[in-house]
Image 1: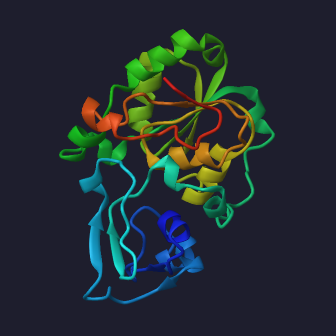
Image 2: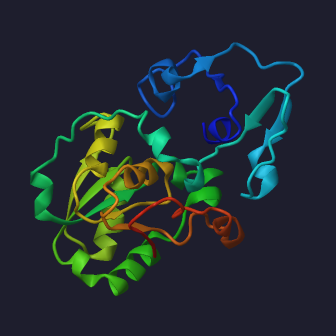
Length: 238
């Protein structure tokens, strides 16, 4: 969407016909419904891979079809125009969420299993420790925890010696409802190194305080290439 608008190009999306592995919703009923889709790319399309550019602005050739490959989850790509196309359910936790001093997302699940563990698992306790040292007032009350892994989150919260209430996903609420609840309100939000909670922060009110992890990946070099705070008003890297 970012590059299509920037270069005035027609955007078409190729997506599987089966369910999204991260949601119960079909791809065709998600944000992709706003764009035309096609069955297969043009044989003459120029292929550009995001990871080959180390986070730099991609050079898009003109007067030819272009096939973009990659995650494309950088803050600089997410414009207000794109966010305005998104629709979330009404938040369900308000006003009860006001009793909390902090909202936190903890990502477990596949992050704990090889080979993804070596790619994504950061030192969560060190992240919490840095946040507590800089903003101790956020940890004096009850912490509302969103997670996909209650057992792992329980260990994290006990080790950090924090009082908490947990919201499970997707058992308690749908993925979209969980995202809407994280994004709502003005209680400070502490996200994990996960695009799921990154989106909650990006869709939150601009004036809301958002804590983002300094280390997005275990690899320091790879973390530096991820500009997680770009376009995130109120975002603070901890």
